Every structure is written in structure tokens, then in C-alpha cells.
Image 1 (cartoon, rainbow, N blue to C red):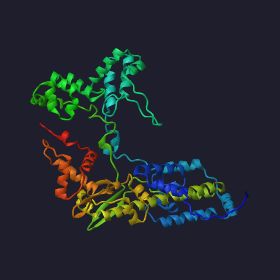
Image 2 (image 1 turned 120 degrees about the horizontal axis):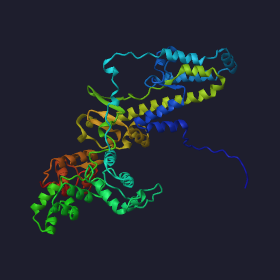
Image 3 (image 1 turned 45 degrees about the vertical axis):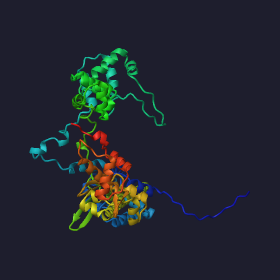
Image 4 (image 1 turned 60 degrees about the vertical axis):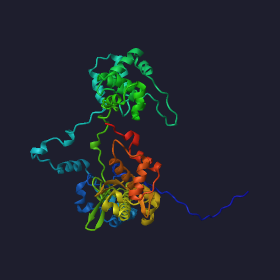
Length: 506
């Protein structure tokens, strides 16, 4: 054994902070990017945008440096000049610093306050409060039930028990007593009404009565432990007859499968009587929380990252920079801080961080546009004629065309949306596996899904098509060779029931 020195030449991928930041920004969605920019603006004093100092762009001494949407080469050159100035002669810098007068910050802030424009009162709509203050908030199911709890005559222990019940409701309005999964993969034990009653200090028999009263609140059937109990509560409250209650209680599985003959045989009645009872049962609500939601779907909007617009015979891809801060270097502040020799190292680091961030955001924008242009080129028929003409495409196809790695394409297309004449789509939407067709080129799997949906929408509702019948129609009309299990998989992905459950007898 001996100690000696050796030279070794090898290639190794090093994840520098700049590369990590670029990769992180590339996979962020639009909202996440805006949040990340706001964090950087708070942490870096030399970074600025129009919201921080909108007048800086109009003054000659505060020109843009590397602003988004402007020439990045000019911005980088000006940043380099600032860094060169920082690396100047220390003696000259110290002499210059001594010549600088002390700043009267109180006078400076007073002048800034005097420069703020006063809001003119123009009357009319300008005096009204903003529209955000006039919008109504959607009422959730728990809030609606708590309002009814406040109107009830429950005592303290009964109210505590009711609050615990409301805290265990799921998104459908049912009482979920199952245990939850821990981070280590294990599950907590299931709970029961008796355990909730013990925690609230309520007698077990009284707890059952309180739960029953809560199930009769609006909407009727809420706080039920399963769909059977929910329907039974509604049938009793709404005064349904004994036959309908019996079908719900003992033949809910046959009712779900539309096996009315089995119900008629067991209850020794005619199928017509079963039909009439099922008509009334179908009027009941199987999901009490249907008209309540934690978030209003109407207020959920997706802002596209890029737009695809047709200009004559050419498709044009443009980015959407609305809402994204346009960053630049606050040169006036930087010059002022550079006069302090003790702040040079700090400002130098912040300048480099700002430069990396501006370049990474600009590179992200260019990459998204470049990938979208490649997708438009390969999916031109889709943009011209619709979803039925979507071509099969995988990540490798785009990666080879733009000269990037597949992982980069995956990051670019995740949580990024494009606005097209055909609608708003995620960039991931355009990547589909291929399905073979007879004597024709392959078709995308998404187009097959739309073909299956179109066939099911046009079927006879009293005699729905089976999966095998859909296979035969696809093969005959479109020449699509597909297995029955594939039709079943695509149908389940689109949330379409099987033929036995789609059948409507009345």
C-alpha cells in the first residue's frame, strides 16, 4: 500500500445553480412562474419591474437592462459593463465614494411622496367599489349545514357531536368513517358513531337520534353512511310507498344493474310494477352534495401560455406575456449601491442572480414557442380540421425535430396550455399513441376516443351498443383495428358506463 497522486480525465455532468434554476423554471406552470418571479423580486434589490418603479423606464438613467421582450444581448452587455465597473480600481472607487454626499433619506422620501399623483374624482362609475367586492361567494355544503346547526335546538354536547360529523363528510356529502392513510403507508383505524359520541360526551342512543335529525336537513339524505341509507332517508321523508322502500333496502344491487326481472321474481310482482317503482326511485338524489362545491367551476379559468393563430395560410405562434412581470435591472439603484465599497460583493452576487433569472425566463419562453411551433407543424391537420385528424405523435418525434432531450420536451409540455381555433388544450394533449387502420395511415388514440364517444352518443338509448359492436363499427366505417378491451378502457377513461348500465327503459 502506498500514497500517490494520479491524474484522471473523465466527463461528468455537473448541475450548476444556473442549470438547476433553468430546469426549475422550465417545468413551472404559468401561475407558479409568476409566484417565483415575485419571490425573486422580494429577495433581490437590483431586480425591478413596472409595478415596482414604472417611471424607471422613461428616465434616461434607468433604461432597461435585459428586459423581457427586448434585446437580451444588449441587456447582457450592459450587465457586463456594470460588473466591469465593479471590478475597477479600488483606489478610484474609494475616492469616488468619499466625494459622494450623504443622502438625506427623510427628504428623499418626502419628495417621493410629493411626486405621487393625486387621484382625481371623476364621479360616476369611478366612485363605485371594485367589482371583486360585489361578487358573491359560493356556499359550501358544510357552511350550509352549519347554518342549519345554528338554527337547531341542540345542547352543547349534541352540537359538538354534530360538528364532528360535519368534519367527517366527504365530497359527496356522505359520512366517511374510514381511516386515513399515513405518510408511512399505514392506515389509521376506522371510527364509529359510538366513538364520535364518546368524544363529544353524548349518550350513544342520543347520538343515533341526532344523526338521524341531521340526515333530514337540507339536502335530505346528507350525513348518510352509504347510498342505501341516503335513499332510504329520502324515501321516508318524501313519503314513498313500501314497495319502493323495499327495493332500495334489499335490491339496490339489482337496481344498479337494471336487473328488474330479478326484483320482480323475488318480490313476486310484475315487471311493470317494478318499472313504475324505479321511476320514482330515480327522482331521488344519490349525491347530496351535487349542488354544493368547495370551489365554483365558473371562476376557474386557465390562462394559455401560447396562442396559435392562422394568418392567411400560415400558422403563427405567439407567447402570452400578460400578467408576467417584465424584469429588468434597476440601474440607478445599482449605481448608487456600487458607490459603497462594502456593498460591492453583495451587489455583484445579486447582479449575477438577476442576470441568470432574466436569461432563464427568456430561454423558457423561447423553448415553449419552439416546441409549440414543432407541434403545429406536425399536427397541421388537427388545427385545420379538428380532433378527428389528430396524428399519432410521441415525445421523441418533437425531441428529434428541435434537437432537445425527451425529458426537456416533457417538462415544456407539462402544465402548459395553448389557445387554438379548435379550443384550449394542454400541450401534452397532442402526444398520442398510434392505432392501426386497414390500408390507411395510423390514427391517434385520442381520435379513436372521440370516434367511440360519437358512436355512443348516436346509439339507441333503449338498445345500447356493446363494446364488441363498437369494435365492429369502427372496423367497418373507419377501418380502425382495435380490441374489445381497448374500447372498454377508452370508454372508462371518458367516464362512459357499460351498455347494461346505459340502457334506458323509460
